[in-house]
Image (tube, rainbow, N blue to C red; front, top):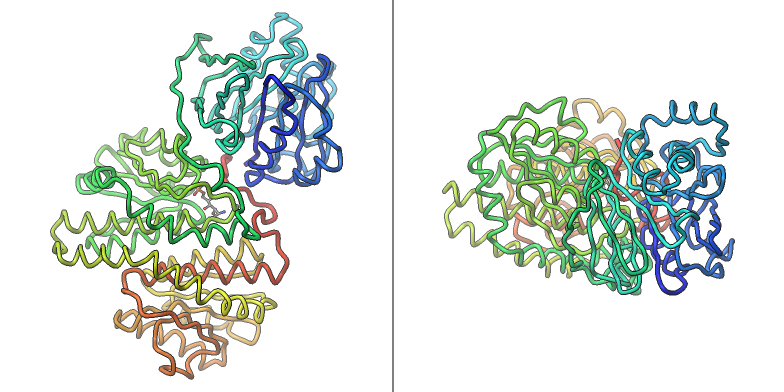
Length: 606
Ligand code: AGP
């Protein structure tokens, strides 16, 4: 949701800024721009389009400077135009600002500033910041004071950074409810929306909290409270991610790379420190009512948790989409709210957790990004260890979260004595086999899925069907198809079909059915009924199943046969097929795989 990158150093930083926003492009990629200090004057270059295109077109690397800020945008206020691209410069040209978030009171501020003679060139909320800085500087003749005054009149959420020709060797930045962190190197300092802005240059980070601002120069940095203006001592966070994992490593797209990393990320999940998981299980066992939360893909992860917990621990836990949480849940000090979030920054989930906390509920999370807002807010966090997920479409993070939630459900079931140690060990063994099973599926089935996806890439309507725990898998696989291929795909429980949607079956509606292994007798047979219902109306069915070749041969229009796997992990294996099917369909349709249109990786606005 917009990426901010800034650097101040001993030598030219133009190239570092380029790398910084390039690494943040997954947060937004409508347009981008940079402000550099050159001979104590601010030079701004900006344009619509991606980072590489922008840098090439404007020859930005050639513009040498030792201090600058850059931005890659995901539009919220104002269309995608060059005028609306960050950075924004004050009327007198002495301040340049980049911002992530929403200044909710920008309209009255803008109207007032216009009356005072400030010249607005964009339709964005951010531009008021540049003019306010100029206005307040004129009163105090002090950049820091002008900054504090600006922060005191703006409402809403922000992570922002600016440079000023009055203090040409410093970067100022602040945050409220949008992530921002500093990178601390020798003779170089960075500011960024996340670690990726500077991970290639330093692994020492300082994570800003809400209500803090910082001033960076080549050799020093200071963090202060916006309210008291007093210095705050901040710990240095060591980034554990390896910068190489953020690179494409020979794969054509991050999405494919991240799908192929899943055997490893599942192993990482299974190797997590048991005491961290046990602490969360303890919270579940003590709570009177618990909820699973997430939004988008992580809502489907939460939905998966609802099924797996009901199945294994024999207790019903509702799942709620984070954005609907306040409207639905009634929580108090006896409640537990557990969320899944890849980024740890998603506004809807963060707001739901804050609401739950304000009501006295205990809150916990599984999160991929250490040091993220959710990771720091909750009472207990499980850092899933999946490494950076760069593609906007979540794959490896979601699958690892499902594995962790399966493990939590097993542990809770054991604690409640609704399963024996023997059953627990059998389930654990099944999970331990999963990385190898998925590796085999990736190695042996990718080519077939590619051909299948190419063959049906012209199909514009898909129904994704699953029953029981396969229903959230169908939903998540359908979301992959929608977001990467821009193809209509509707996830639905198999049993729901005959209550209305069946009327749609014709030559233009294609169904993909996630069939459980035959050992899961009840679910398996009921899923076959759904398939029969479609086939009886001459509908097309692609069956993804575990039944040996030749059995139920005539049931499917097309079939993808998977090797026999333990039933516990079968839905997770099928999700990988769904991911690949969406990926290869998008390839056939020549979509922008890692950066689909209109989307951003972490949605930090309401
Ligand atoms: C995933 O493919 C999506 N792009 C999106 O639905 C995402 O899962 C959602 O925005 C939640 O993000 P989070 O996991 O970072 O909280």
